Amino acid sequence: MTTTILGLDGADWQIIDSLLERGELPVLGGLIEKGCHGTLHSTTPPNSPPAWASMITGVNPGKHNIFDFTYIDESYKRSGGCDVPHRLRPPLWQILNRFGMSTGVVNLPIHYPAEPVNGFVICGLVTPWSAEVFTYPPEISREIGNPADHWLIGQTLVRGGSPKEFLEEIREKTRTQTDWILRLQKEHRPDFLMAVFDGTDKLQHFFWKHWDKTHSRHDPRAARELREAIPDYYRYVDACLGEVLRARGETDVFIVSDHGFTRMERDVFIENWLIENGYLRLKSAPPSATQKQFEKTGRSIWNTFAGNGTLKSILKRNKLTNWLIGRIKNKAEESENASKLNQNVDWSATRVFFAGVSSQSLQVNLKGRQTFGIVEPEEYESLVREVIDGLGKILDPINGKPVVRAAHGKDEIYHGSWMENAADVIVITEDGYSLQEGFPGHLVAESNLYGTDRSGGHRPEGIFIACGPNIRSNPVRMEARITDITPTVLYLNQLPIPDYADGSVLTDLVDETYLASNPLEITDQITLSQSKSVEMTPEEKELLENHLRALGYF
Ligand SMILES: [Zn+2]
Image (cartoon, rainbow, N blue to C red):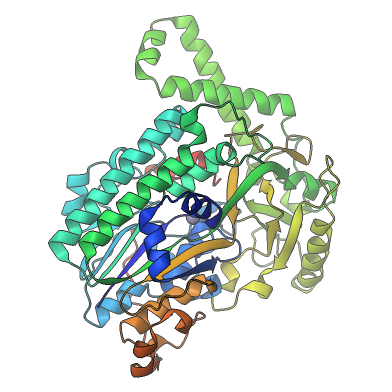
């Protein structure tokens, strides 16, 4: 029997249900009818790097070491932290390869560089834009061409393109990805295929307000293509899933998302709160709101020019305009650097700092761990408690309601050998809020005022649908954890489950006959065969950072 995992990054039942009610999404609808489905609970925080890593290893982030896109090193700098060499548990396909099965993995986020496998690999998000090789076998990379132009979603955002151009880019790249899956399926017929479409996540971040009529920035008069952007893409991807599944033939299939989605309306500038409460001190005053606005305008003007070669070359002939553009660009960069947390913080008077937008977490400036750490290890526990209490009391000045639903010390949610790399306090905001970096002079603001207009954000409740010869039929919506997928797939291939797994086999969805004839086996023999580390060049790192920033993760 073969297994197929098709990922829809950030797919959410709210959208799928609304389309199923109208009789749309025939492929997903058919799988739900014949198989099982339910909520797939993500990691905390519900962020793609830890979530996908938990999906493919069956363990919590404390055991696989992927907590975010990056981690903060001892000198307060962001370092790469979520690619293959940092993932310290074997992925599902490595185990399958070891038991003689062939595998294909296409466009999985947080998967780079491509490691040699019995089958094929095409890497996904976190592949540097200029990477010459991001596939196994390497020849595939040459045929695909430059990953920014032909594979990874986000190029139009970095260049400041219009929403319409962004929609076109997503559609085009989804087509390319589907064609490659079909071609490699035909050439290799792997026992296990995992492919991820990430257009769902990118679209929902930037177009959620057009779909969600209750969103505070919903505009019912917006163009049809914007209002229908999310449903249109789900319909398109449903058809792509159909093409892939037809090519796969008889197979156990899992449709999964790494997290769900919800509205994002307001930013919480948590560093303001840290300063006001004496946890964080700056060396000089942060840039004022007007300066921030100038920086934003300067950057968007620059992006417009940079994204338009013709306009730029015409303007270059004019010395005055040229000088002006240079000034705006320099000012924008200056201001951006000044607002970078690690450059303006007085570490000798800082006890707690913000670790980043994607991880929604705080870090303690701990003595012995950070270069200029001032918090004594024996103070750590009480400081973490105090901060967690304080976060719960932050109120939105507009409606007087709390903005933080829960905050956790890392020991409450993770366990394993890599706890030292986890952030100290992980924050779960109420629906509609997101912790943001920067110092605009107030605590809470509309999430479109500073930076790009992101109107959708992650929530922990993702989706799963399972269907196939070894899956039973059950219309009741079930509950599962993201760590359950790997043990379940191993079991369905009559393979033992690693003893270190945190997830369990979802026996409720396995066919009764299969269950009765296949005893569950546990093994302590699964170890990681580490792929050799490929250090990114500074240019590659910069391109990757620009990409992640444009997507709103930094
Ligand atoms: Zn995701």
